[in-house]
Length: 412
Length: 142
Ligand SMILES: Cc1ncc(COP(=O)(O)O)c(C=O)c1O
Image 1 (cartoon, each protein chain N blue to C red):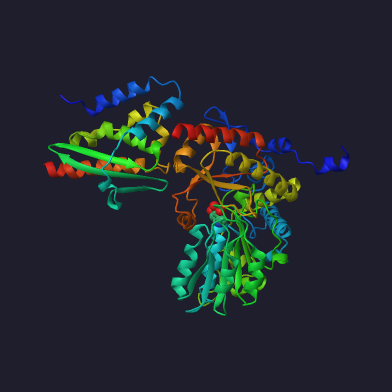
Image 2: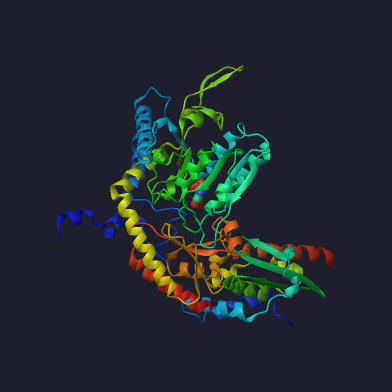
């Protein structure tokens, strides 16, 4: 073997050593963590950064004259630059720290309340996390705008021609996820963004499920807003980012009032701070922001190309093995999908299967995955969802398959 | 003389003590879940549905003399097994006895995790509902 191929090789054993939680046992079995789409695990490198923050330089940022505050501010702003670089934003102040994807979506939806008028149209996709449809329903109610939905097909893909038909001069905003959390479908966001821009509509992409697998380049995509959560990409919970093009962020009013977001305040008038602070009211999750940066550094060190290639291998391996089980039904069979498998067996309740898998140390998600419209489409109460990450192994998939067969036998 | 709730619970604990591991316990529960027609189809209606997010649970209550009788069901088989156990313990007693009874025995038979308030299976709400019925019928009996 040449040294060149050795460099390219991916060692899952080595990567696993970075994740202390993977050594845990659950109910006497080695933990098999296949609920990565809900939240990912945290490598020691990120845990160390969190411990270092609280051990050495915990202080409030952007306001102190003292050394600790300066250090914390520098690290926090450094993390913003790391995020900017990762997503290839043109400017650092186009990166807004949020508490997560949900916060980012609400921030944009709330901002558009002052930009929309009655009869304007918002297009959302049928593949959304249902809690993320609510902000648009509220927005529509507030402004008199109309919500339209891009339908999906049996494979779990958006029907692109139907999107083109929904678009018109009235369309002001398009919202969709880059990757569906329930099915793993990768949506054709490039095409959708280009087409929406022909009508001057803004596009907000929910990248929560894409970011752990695909390195999005916001300039190449020409996307107007892109939101993610750190906890799905090896970072801590309660922090995320909203990328917004400068021109859009300047147009949107602030979301919350408070410290950090103001320039001058008198009782007559307040002038808002410049970007990004206009949208960062109050003391943020400082440690979380810094750790988010560390998580991106970690993932980039592993390498997104390797992550994608390896996860694809896991997906194919698991899909093939699952389909050998009698009565197996997999939902979401798009050729373009991330390492997520949503399935049911012979009308067995997903909750029952999940309960037995848990007894065998295997963590999966069961239920409707906050995507009720998708479950309604397939006329099922929910699915069992196994979602893989780059630290999972084929041996774990073998254990999972064995457990699924065991559950099936017990429940039959 | 019919058995008290306490006695029935002890009987159930006895039965479960024969099993060595979780798998046998679960297989037994699944059997219970499968074998019992727990509720008349006509009572599987929206008003009797307890929404537990993932598995659905239906409960129907009826007064028979001074005894309150429950029938219930679930769409998930493991949940249904536990429903069967709970019904066996609680159904056919005076409302005030039902109100006093606790669910400690579920812990003792190794199924505690199913009655955790954070588990989305509807069982905790079901027990609450049984007690609500008991309160309502107790008032009616007075
Ligand atoms: C596609 C998608 N959007 C949004 C969210 C919500 O993310 P958060 O809870 O971190 O705000 C999730 C999380 O499950 C998701 O999968």
